[in-house]
Length: 411
Image (tube, rainbow, N blue to C red):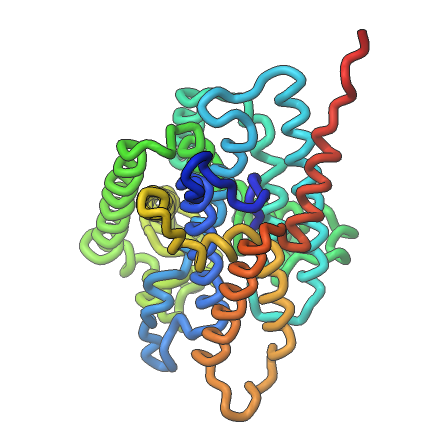
């Protein structure tokens, strides 16, 4: 949840305009933050017994979190060589910096996991993803494309074979809550939850960081690449979603899944549109044919990854426009987007204060969301104008510098 390039936005020499690459990437990250906050604070389903999906659920569920992960991959690519990845000692130094940054994120995530909060905190999973992606940082574009395609196609199948074994263990290797420091005492259960049985299964989510690495190796400041990301990302996302809907509604998938004992009593139709969390997705190969949010299937990864690529392309284009007209209108998103680790952590802490309690008199879910969203924007813009990192971003950046330190050669 933190940019790999966490320095305040740089200026292009001679015209003072903000770099389109940095402002566009940070703006996309800011949009992801606000989208993720909306799924935490606003209803994603209507009241029972209909459980009709809400607009927030249909638009943001699954996509905002995936966008964060893809942007993490992009940030890693930008910090480890852009089009030409680093090699040798430089690469090992970069990996050390990423590992130390992951350590900071993990500590923050474990701390937030100890709060009583009805939010699925992503930070520990995010940190593990950073560590898992280290071996791929030195790969060139072609190799990254092959790895990302293979991972998108194969990881859901392998996960579907492993997950039932972990859930059938006694007790099941699943946490049922956010990872916290106490879970370090049961490492097997913790790792099983992080990689396969939890809310953000790292094994499949590696796909997003690989996609981000591919995108980050491209010439992001060129109009051709920006349009390519927007058009191709939108096309892939659309096709994947259509195939998923056909599989469920026209080819018999939903009827087969509704007949399973484990799905009885659940509003499966609505869950397929918004969020499959809560269903273990076992006992049928039809689970692999859905493009539902948080399904972790190939179609889900293609759809959400395509959406992320399209959003990145769009914001890069807007960043280029801002640069040309010399008006940084993206600051309302790029400001908070440059300090998402701090703002996300503050958001989770605030939400924990209202968990399992009624909202204060006169407050609504919408009012709570817009108050926090506007506060995040205001804080982010202030830090951007002051050209300062967020507090947790400063800690992560310092840890990264320590991890990537290389003694000067002697002689």
